[in-house]
Amino acid sequence: MNLHTTSHPVTPRSDELVPSRYALKIGEIDVLVVSDGVLTLPGAMLAHNAEPAVRAAWLKDNFLPPDAFDWALNVVVVRSGGQTILIDAGMGAEFPLPRAGQLIHRLKAAGIDLASVTDVVLTHMHMDHVGGLLVDGVKDQLRPDLRIHVAAAEVKFWESPDFSRVSMPPGFPDALRNTAKRFVKEYSSQLRLFEEEYEVAPGVVIHRTGGHTPGHSVIRLASGDDRLTFAGDLVFAVGFEHPNWYNGFEHDPEEAARVRIRLLRELATTGGVLVATHMPFPSVGHVAVAGDAFRWVPAIWDY
Image 1: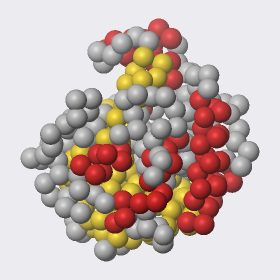
Image 2: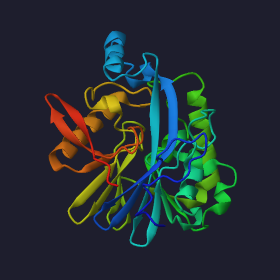
Image 3: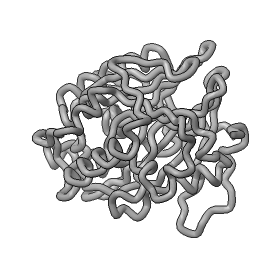
Image 4: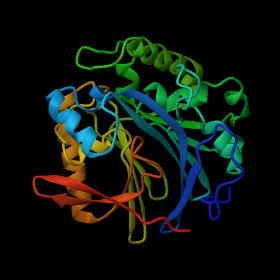
């Protein structure tokens, strides 16, 4: 896998968003952020505990439409210590969202052979994080000794999930439940469960945070003086200015807000790089303190 020139776009398909991948180095660790596309969801899902007028003002201030919001879908490929690690797997074809589910052909365009992937790390088991591995024909391309790392609490949760505190469009709870159950059935023999923390490869450590889902995890990369945190679904664009706003997909909104604030404070202090699933591609930047809240500082693209 050659990550050093992959930020340059190849000839796009007529329906493809470009650029769709961005490479960077964290010390000796190669990192590639890959776009799985975008999904359009109701604007209210940004903050179902906020006053509608306040939420509408935030959308307007950010030049976004009042009733819908395009959520980016970012996946990360990491190479460390001879291992090639896929962090999350995108939407796949589990739900009819026409601009999402681009991961498999974008990995191919980046020259990444699925058979080269030694490990998959899941931040959690929502369908936009596992669906790419359920696309027809994908499992047959994966190596038989593939290891899929996920928190034990996450697998336990999806045995009988609780949707009592989420705020999702109709159909989403059933789709999430069905996808998670199908995923466990398809890949049960390759799951490698951990409790709180596990080092997947040199400098690549997965930590369970909970909040968004009971087993939600972040992945921390460390090499030399460089640090990067892939925050999964803990951080959304609105979460810097309004870290206490509840996202519609959060199964424990109060805990998700507490974890989000802790993480943002930590990153503001350390200066480490942040990448997150639903931040605008390529979602590479830093966190700064802004009064009682935070500020997102996008990294300058390195060509």
